[in-house]
Image (cartoon, rainbow, N blue to C red; front, side, top):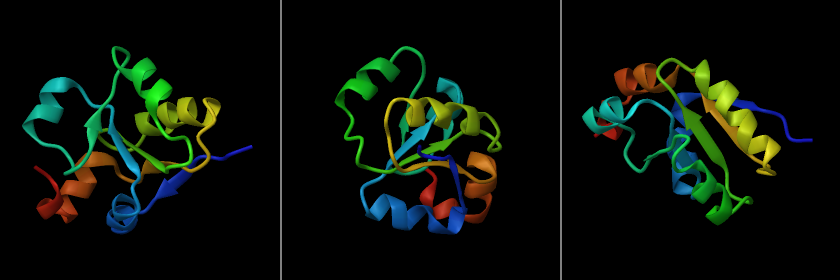
Length: 104
């Protein structure tokens, strides 16, 4: 059984370069204001489509504001058969403080 992993923010670029999905679960206004370059916003309205189309062999990195909600959301992907699932440690707020060049 796959276990949730916590991803150190310094390793996110490596995951992106390797083709990982970076999924942002924050609200639409927050995402539109700023988000991690290359991420996609996901919520209840589009998760079913993502799950049906996504390559389950690719890594999934879930981010929220501070890293707590993403841990719960990441469990959904584990339960759907994704084998390499991460919650971004410290969430979006922490990441963009230390990596502003990767936040649009």
